[in-house]
Amino acid sequence: MTKWRLLRTGHSTGAENMATDEAILFHHAEGKVPPTLRLYGWSPPMISIGYFQSLADEVDVEVCKKLGVEVIRRITGGGAVYHKDEVTYSVVASETNPLIPKNILESYKLICGGLIEGLAKLGVEATFAPLNDIVSGGKKISGNAQTRRKGCVLQHGTLLTSVDVSEMFSLLKVPDEKLRSKLIQAASERVVGLDQLIDDGNNFEKVVEALEKGFAEALGVELEPGELTDSEKEMAKKLEREKYSRKEWNGKR
Amino acid sequence: MSEFKKVYKVPDGKLLKVFAKIEDGKFSKLAITGDFFLHPEESVEELELQLLGHAPNAPEIEKSVRDFFASPKTQAFGITPDAILKVLLEIGDELNNQPTSKEAVQ
Image 1 (cartoon, each protein chain N blue to C red):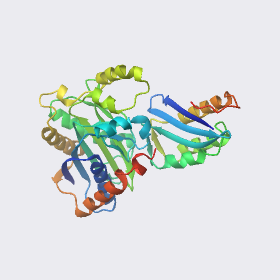
Image 2: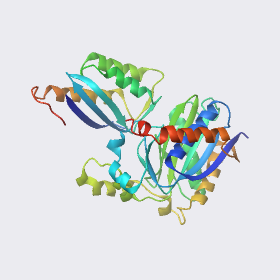
Image 3: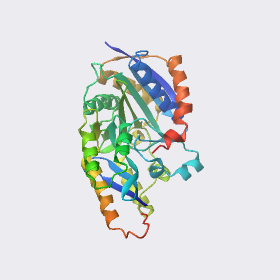
Image 4: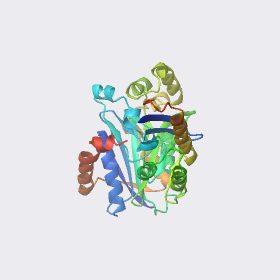
């Protein structure tokens, strides 16, 4: 069976997390590391915005500053996410990898299958909702985003283990203040955290273990626990410092 | 100079937000933003640059947008050429309906 590298990197800052995903992508493109599944979390809580989003239009920068919540632009498209109680994954593989469908929608479906299988192990039924969501009982439990660069696929996404919609909305801009409470209400009806579905759903380690099994099954690979290489760590540090901590990148749109 | 912000929910797609500045009837700044997906991502900046210096209803605008999406290297999800053109034309309509003697900021 094909072997992929499994990285459990625990909780890191937003800049470190996004820099690490990009460093893995770069190293896999150079053929220096195997295809990789990384499972991780965020500490302290922060916001990521999609590549194409306007930072100032999506995020209440003043409130974030006051509360010390960092805002980071991803290299992937999609929407703004408040990362707090969740397990995040990233998958990096070559576009020529026979396991990865050329078609982008199909590849989302395959990789999201890892989460769906993982959720099944936890007793939660969930389905893929194209393009990039996973829903359980009609509510979104996972958002995902993919980019293709340097001949590689990077897909990362989040599995919500607990959600506080009002906290999330306090950090995001809303089109009309008068509608804020309505939006919060609507979002609570649309989004669900794992802790609302199962006992002990907000248990990071337990969810990580389930996702490892889920991804191995969905991708049909053997996951071998590994570490970031020194070169990956070095590049991640550099990207963290020179890209993801800078307003030139985070505020570029 | 006039500034515009236009928000449009792409049918069956994502939320498109366009920020534009118009000087002398032509785009002097343009940002096509939103929660959509476009591969390769950086190409959106090339498209924005191509549109600068043209009036919202200039034929070059429609050609650039359509050519961009028709290019085999572009893959788009949740955003369409029609959505972008609709928003840019709306900006043009608003511009034409503005009193010319005053600066209007939306």
